[in-house]
Image (cartoon, rainbow over all chains, first blue to last red; front, side):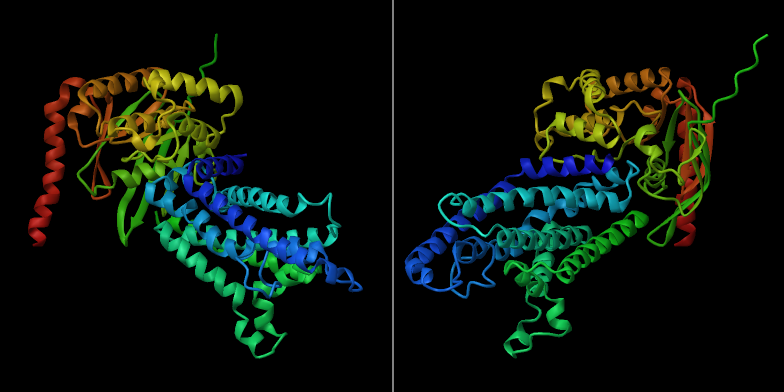
Length: 261
Length: 253
């Protein structure tokens, strides 16, 4: 009950701050531009692609590619996940760091809420906001569903992958906010960790190494499988672990903060 | 013949409470209790341990040692008690600048377990009681210091707590508002609310408190009932205790 009170409070703060709306509006405008370009490329190649047996369709070339540049291989504007690497830290930076600055954090502690419930309440609020953002982005390719053949299974897998990537980035962002005294520090830290986690295997990839721990560690490895429509429990476990580790570290610091006073 | 009613446990009971901050004892072996309807003035020079004591009572800080009971129940074992039983106004009213006065009360009410009609009624009542009804839609970030303080007090009182913990509540209030605050505290005490009031103002203590406790270097040095005509005596006791610190410093130097 009180966890939901924290979630409601955080959602209210997200809704009344212009930053959340600016981020959402700019991101959707950019995604709209990306969608138009992807659609243009698809229409230009439609006749040639139709002649190919099992050739890629609207889902592969437009809908899924809206989410990420990972499998586009062309110099298009950022996909949703690349945007999220930058924008989610901006959205999460104030969740706890600003509470600390405004002196409202001790007030939350004084309501008898544990550090984990405070952190989880904030995380849920951010996730609700990001889910709304993802659904709006999803509405763009789905709006043409009546005129094209959509592979709903593949789109669902890609959407799940994008949702999980957002969930990991949000967990990192909220956790960094629990550590930082200033929102800007939290944003920079979350951005750096998110970028590192996403492309820690870049060197290995360039050297042609496609397996091993370094590739397992990178978020892009697991995200790519889901974007290609492949849902495996190993990938889902990785996302679950990443979220749990980030939230546990944030909770631990918040609890220590409470002890220190 | 009616059997005598069992005595109610004190609203607040501290036993040998100790808390270190930044490597030094901020509060040392503090033992104190407070009955329903009592108003306790907590005095002390800067750094005496008043704010640390109040933060522990409010549930924002855990003691290193000692026991803390609210209405007879161990508060450290059941920190969720604070949610309903305690209202706390820290030295600077903690507000979210992007939320309105009304949204603050809704958020505080939800955090303290109020919902639906009860929350709506409590919000309306406290806005009227603290004369904030015209400010419901104003953002906390644009309120004056005095208005912020009144909003902080409204948030602390919204859920009708059994114990009200106030740290310098008269800060930034104008003389008219100070008088209104005094009468509000007396009204709350008459309704059975126990109040702890930390302040630097001796006049504030003599005007509203029926008991005074003086902290010095984290330890309780004085705890006695008080009547309104004891201002001079209280001033002497306070300065005697405070000068003790000054003389110790001189000796150390």
